Image (cartoon, rainbow, N blue to C red; front, side, top):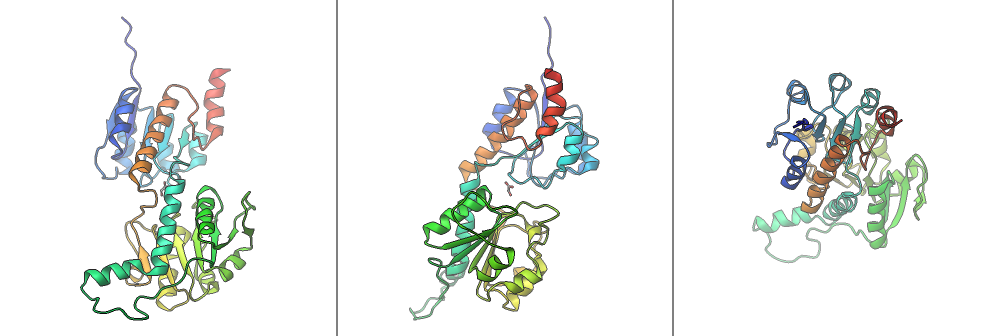
Length: 329
Ligand code: GLV
């Protein structure tokens, strides 16, 4: 009898159980079933001899880490992939995948929920009622801003940006946007400055890259309307958090709905003090269906790579061409 060795996969942190079950049908699984983050040394030690890693956005794959990996694939359970140095992975012939599409509407729902919450002061209202402070109805108790018929500005008109724009249109908003290129979407493409100056609400949907780090800083915040509300469900470092705290404290803008931070889970102490900031702990894609779906897509990508198939949501086709196309030839 010939014994064939099963491929082996490292899952760096807890994911949905059905994803682990699926993986176990195809591979040996080294599972860290906790929410603890593996140190780079532990990550490398446990990745040794494995063919795939199922990772999360808190796992950092720097060029130094990647240089020591022998895996075929890093399957990230996230749409964002700024935690992985893609050129270094491609150079080493390591496939990298993310989990797009499944979370598009879920994340846009949450961005719009933050927009509504900040505009209509829902969190303040909730705290007010729970604190037993509601004694009588008054004409201007907890008055906020209208959302309908106002201007929604979007930076980054990709999948999630467009889903946000559709929600805005559903609320009869005027939608304007800025991106590197105009998108195939029925909304006004405008300069960055025009979006900053004319929007009542600005929602960020750009990936984190060297170009988008601090894309919104003091100059941009100062260009916004004093009533404008900034929504960030993209990545924390896209916004200069200290400048945002000052902008809210000094009234350069009217409010913010922020789900992502520069040094998660730490938050700028001045931002934490701002009552006009509605804050959430990076839960944009956090619905049961979507988080389960993200877990499944990642493990399906891992298994595809183990079986020599092209993963569905491959980020670096060059790595595929380099390693697999050569083998097929
Ligand atoms: C979450 O932030 C993701 O990138 O999926």
